[in-house]
Length: 400
Figure 1 (cartoon, one colour):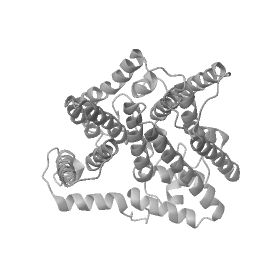
Figure 2 (figure 1 turned 90 degrees about the vertical axis):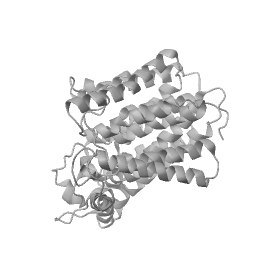
Figure 3 (figure 1 turned 30 degrees about the vertical axis):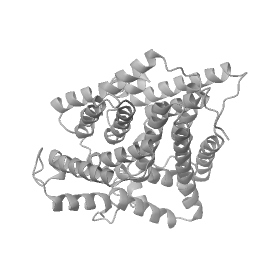
Figure 4 (figure 1 turned 60 degrees about the vertical axis):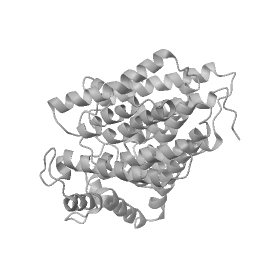
């Protein structure tokens, strides 16, 4: 966890490829070690969870064979799925000691400090996301959403308002990362999490609070971020027409070359491309090596009718790589993970609610935003590690 928590600092010294190989090798050895010490035990997996995970691996290998994909790139693609499995296996032997909690706290609370330092030195940019990443700017949104969700859970369970203060402080990461969607989605995520915790019907008071929180968040974001106001500066003037036009063109526009722009425009272009490419291509995609290590200047943009690969949602990435079949199985895997963690909410409330919220963010990220949480190995390993801990709990006897 320490390596993943400070990955952004480490890869500034060690090449990213060497770092990833080293960490994944370490996790593999840990997983093998767990299997060896558990040779007299039975690892308990949820049936659907493990079926979907191995189905993903099978579809990926099938796509690679059909499309004659690079073996190394296929292995690189598979490592994210394998991390779910390895993290689960390690988590099945996990003990939440004081040292583990201190380490986790160190990682989490280092992020806003690093973001403030970055603001003072570099200003807002999509590089240097706390200490967890040098690039992958979308993590400034998704990682922050995950953490503020945990803070809200602590607030609801303890009624200590310091956790609400933590939400505002931690939001500096999204601002430092120049993230726009955060200010639109954060209040909605908190509202949904509150519904999950309370499990009560929505009332008028909650709707009023949500409306006020969402309006305030959008207003602050539009004035703080230069790209969202016509003045193009911090605390620029509020212009709802400018904001609306910007959001629409950014998410669903079309370039002069007729390429799809934004999450909506790009997704529509991707689907049209797959639909016209034959049944096999539609079902199994163009191969797991299709987008591996491809830059925005690669011809793959024109091949799929998309203006920028950075505008890919998670489902677009998987749909183009392993087809509609693979992307659907992955969605079912995430939904099963969500259902499974929610099932244990009375056994370990904090961990269960945190994982439930995290999978909600991952599903939103996958369908509508990017693939940042699907490809941030630290988050994959951590969530599956906690999943393994939950399921091996002696009080968790709710398997069917």
